Length: 103
Image (tube, rainbow, N blue to C red; front, side):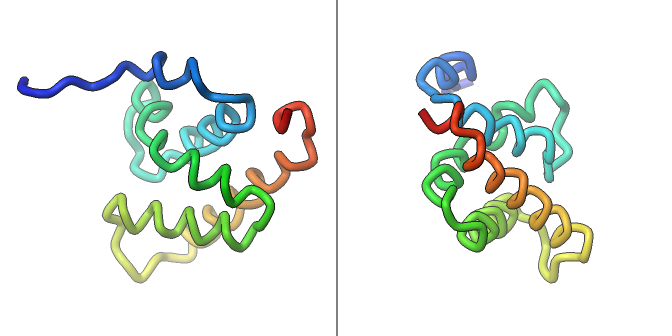
């Protein structure tokens, strides 16, 4: 094919619990509606940006909106996308209260 992709499991090996949970939330959301077996890999490049914003829900929303922009979703966003972004940002913000994943 002329290129190689690093298998997801190699990426997961270096991820802490917080990032694993963020990735699980993004994969479950799956705004591109990719097949479930691909979703856990599809959004990995956004996990660190979301983790860096973990203490600020507005910043998480900003990162999620940038993500859907980068994924090519058309503007203006429908109310369903905005609702999803708000719901996902709250789920990710709630991880701050679970100290087991912030170690």
